Length: 466
Image (cartoon, rainbow, N blue to C red; front, side, top):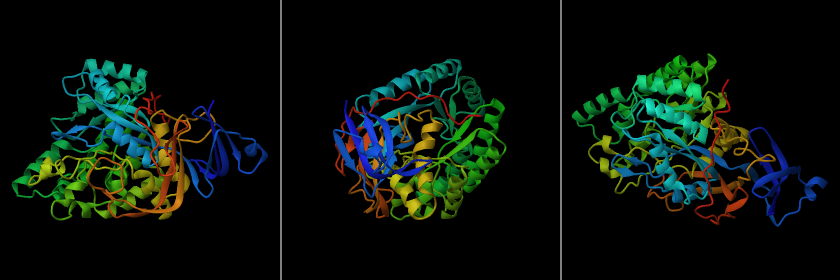
């Protein structure tokens, strides 16, 4: 039996802050005891980690990543090996990635392909959501089987006609099925049919620069799709989770639905909290680095997102990590913004950016852990195995130095991408040591993990449903 004790740190969870020592046995948390008490002094271990002056927090749960995703004629540049290693460097110890069903193929084929990509390659634990691109009788039956296997959430797209797009009838049928089997529908809410008209018109006018990506994907079309998804879910009697919410008007739709008592949830991402259309408008095609969908919005939308996180109209911050290199991938769209691969790198930056939000006074320490660890774990059926520090939980623990300062840069990050979306940004707070199921993955700023430590983690259904 291997035993580790973490001494002297401030344990911060979504519900508590306590100066406590943490005892780990065989990959799980065995006990907590207030520091410098007889109970804590009685903890004995093979390995002691001194966390004096540091935070001891649960490992982050990033519920929205796209490793090796095929998109726009290329692939996301992070593999499961490089992406999960970078996640660990950033204090995230569980990712939930998206397996993709291709039109004309089964969910099983898509899920098996993603298992093959991830198996034996991950530094941290992982789960899968399933992208449903082709709703038919066979697919609907498969959804039931996937829920039984611990793949309990299904993503649909109101955007990307001809690729991932589902029409309202397909969405309704999938929602009806999830209402029966306990699954959670995740929605990319943008009116893709209308957006395609605006794209075509912009290109015809010669508006080809990256900034027009943001201008054609209008906030009103995000709000309209969010509203429509909510109403379809209401008709189906199904819960709904709206991914990467970026706009004031979309937050308002979610808030209204939640005020009506509906099981409707919302996620936003660091890029919408810290970046804006100013980045999309950077000259010399640099704006292409910031092309993602939903797009970055004008800065004034940020206040509504922060307010939504404080009022719990938005519950989760995930990254939508989907990196494409500037050279050789993003530049496929020179002269035509619609050909720029959509996605940003961020899996390594999330915990630090949200700690900066604590420093800046946007959120509290406990809310930081809630939106980055505990709520995503509960939302997707991983709690209390993941997302907290409590007896019986997996020992996914981060020793976090709240005073260390760093400058984010492509030169120092570990994501397999040639730029940082936050280049030059100064932040306070830094990951020092990371344990995954009690095993050190990062040890005092050195990588000590290995590919294959991370295992597939089946999930139960959403733990927030009325």
